[in-house]
Image (tube, rainbow, N blue to C red; front, side, top):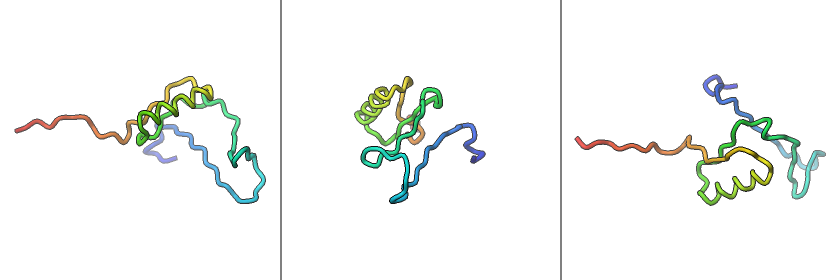
Length: 87
């Protein structure tokens, strides 16, 4: 774990597809994992580049998958909102 980001306690699920390999593939090559997101994750933050409509749609999709929390866009890459006073 990178020390500078240790406080974030992130979990990343990574998958590498190997052609013709046996594995838990479903329809259209989708890989499914049994995971209770509400028990594992404290929050879900969406990509800040998403539009408001895309964010709303993804939030509805997560709710349909039984996610109980909110799923806002991350504010990590937003420009600060401030005024520079004239001198």
